Image (cartoon, protein in one colour):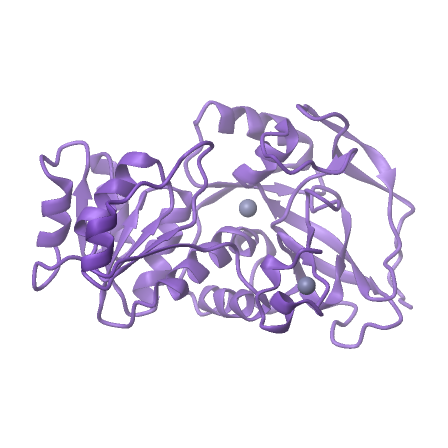
Length: 353
Ligand SMILES: [Zn+2]
Ligand SMILES: [Zn+2]
């Protein structure tokens, strides 16, 4: 099957009970099934979802014991006998959607994230916080060889998610899009993707620093909700004709920014939610939604084609992600910083330390 030497044991971070913490220990290396590949994960981004999975915050139970992680970038070291389109030695990525049935009504129309039989990396199957991870060959991300594996890792969840959200907004080149939470991890990537897609970005966030970073990444305008007396009026005023942005992307959705979006979105415009703060709910005036023909929707990760497109923007140098690298052994410290909300940018773990 392969010439690469694969050890029988490896280092991993394991959630042994719901609530955590993670335990850094040696576990066996799995063999890939007929339709699977084994990836020697070099780097993995750490996403807020990984923290939620460890703590058991969500209504859907995780597998236990669990190896988390779904932004894994590495090298294919083995493949099952049915795999034809992924080569040993190729750079590949493990993303949230580890596999899907490829036969249901959703998979048939390339909505595989909605597959009722979807396998989720670092949630229902072991993910990328280990040195050797298994994924369905049909779903691995094909990482171009010129992309550095540490820098590309965050694209595999955060990048795909914001890019897909922008596609789902239906906004076209030349139109205005508001990015809410534009100074955060998802938001700063969204600003860059939007700009690269030819959209005109209005960043919305709190604080002068975030304004500076949004503008340096390509936002045309910035509305600081901490000092704005009327966010709705200011966002509308940032569009050429004063009628408001064609789309709004909610990366950090809580109730108030959402209600503001329903006020400033242009008639016929679309509000897309991608962030998922615990317990947040949508409330919009039905009258306005009807007479202004406003669309409100959710967008959830991306399909295989979205994945390759999102990676291609990165390959072309149009999107960069600020990140800091630490050893896999330090994962619990990263979770601690996340809990204390002390993280700016993204953490990437190096599985060799
Ligand atoms: Zn994620
Ligand atoms: Zn399916």
